[in-house]
Amino acid sequence: MNSPELQELTAQIILRMEENTPRIEKCLAELSEEEVWQHPNPASNSVGNLILHLCGNITQYAISSLGNRPDARDRDAEFAAEGGFSKAELMEKLDWTVREAVETIRRADREELLRVRAVQGFDMSGIGIIVHVCEHYSYHTGQIAFWTKLLKSKDLGFYAGVDLTVKNG
Image 1 (tube, helix red, strand yellow):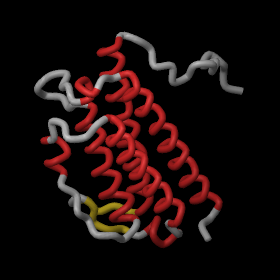
Image 2: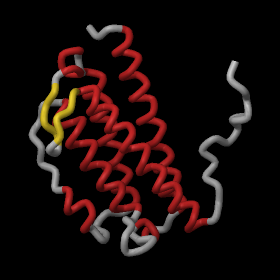
Image 3: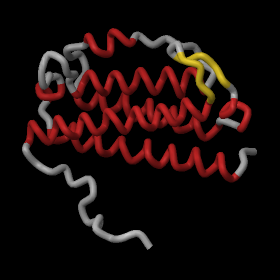
């Protein structure tokens, strides 16, 4: 069994991961099938590419490395895709990937969270892996939200009904 500190860490990582999935789903609901694969400029990725990239990264780090499964990621294909997945298929793929990663994180014991292993050429502990997965997911969720806001010129209401002006107690 993990210490209360490790339990709190994994619970917070899972909370943050699970709050990003509905945000991406909300973005996809705003975008047309064509807009999902539209690139803001030649140096940027489409929402579709970012979702495929998230699935590849989360799988490689959390499901494969932390979960001790084979690594079959094709990173180049994530960015080369110019379609081939509908919004529904992308969301299904992302949802499955995040659920599988969350279960892998939940099952990780103290030894797995502290063990250092090679992931994508980096030496990382299990804690390093789950922090990376969480921050990487949040980073690209922000990109997807920003691109959606630019395309639709509207607020996405992620914090609708929440008073964000409340001071710390």
